[in-house]
Length: 180
Image 1: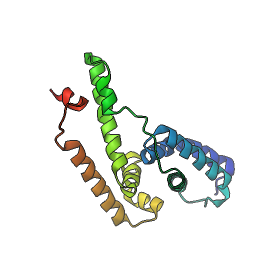
Image 2: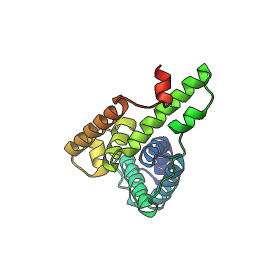
Image 3: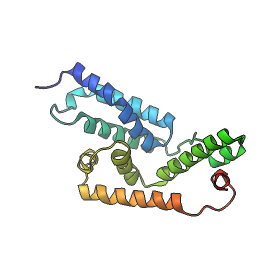
């Protein structure tokens, strides 16, 4: 039994939170992720006839989001960073509760920055497997690469993130102040 076009549209709507997380992981900023999502959804809805019934709709949609992001990168080489930076966090008030929030935001900004520094192929795999919870095989299908490549890229990405997070920090930024 094949799904009708309205059924597929409803399934796409149900996938939107996962697709947006993936777009955000690729893009690094909400603005770019939203632009990528809008364009990807327009593409998908305009080409529903290209979806093969009986295959995984989420894989098809992840591929569309990924290619849309790649197209965006090719058109726009510069990305704007609107997240809380360590410098901005350091300049904000420091009562106990605010300090905890600022520290948490700075830590999150650090992790996001480190993810953004990963090579694109590692960032894609990390987002699909770690954030979206796809199996290695499903991620391999989405990206059109062997499962061993998925495992290798994921391992390298995780090691780079762990090193970046665990390396001793120097200076007097907000993360160091929080540890005193």
